[in-house]
Length: 346
Image (cartoon, rainbow, N blue to C red):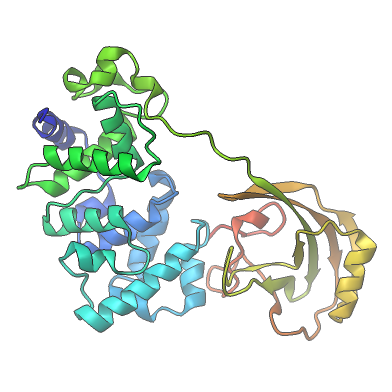
């Protein structure tokens, strides 16, 4: 053992951020915060967190929330499958555990959308269970402490680092220890340019001693993302924009978008033909400015045309509506923020 906790915990006590989910660290609040913070910065997530727990203060409230309203509450955070999985998990919590998250790592891990890290965070912080919570911040801290250039994307490397995390964990205070590691990675042992001069673990850090801390951890180069053309028809009537419900499975499941054709670069005449088939007569205006949206594995390259039409009856899966109505059901993802007012915002 290197004595990580002895130096880290006093630093955490003095430097921890006063975040709302730390002021009232119930299992539910920790769960919501950890799911929101996946792929989202703390500062960006906080307003969503506070609104979410104010409207849905318990797992039972989350379980019973209408799905369209849940997506509206989540609008702007992205990765909407997180919210859908949370609702499924909340329904299981109500069915199996009386509406309270179970104080058991394996039971937590079995819930939809809860992986090893989130189960460890809830178990340790809410229930004081000695369980690891190893995320990217923690992997970076331990790669530098041990001056280890193993590929952190490999399962064997993560297992090794998790064992090291557990060897340093004080069994009486696993929650503060896990939080302190996360905080150190977020505030001091940051990617690229670690602030080694103010790090409480500097004396223990082999990466600092070798001068390699800034180059750790090691990851393989990212694969080039596939570029996908998307043709958008931004049609507005007195009843709002022509919106299209996305499929129930896959990317941006069940969200609404302006009528568009993914994987196709259509001319305006071809687009007009598609709209005529739907019974929508359009008066065309200007071309839309090209835009792009980057997903995890692909890049949408958007283009298209703006037009107006009279509101008319539409086939199933299409509707007239607006994304900037916070109480409405039309959750439009930020991929269309360049075109649709309110898209991706609340």
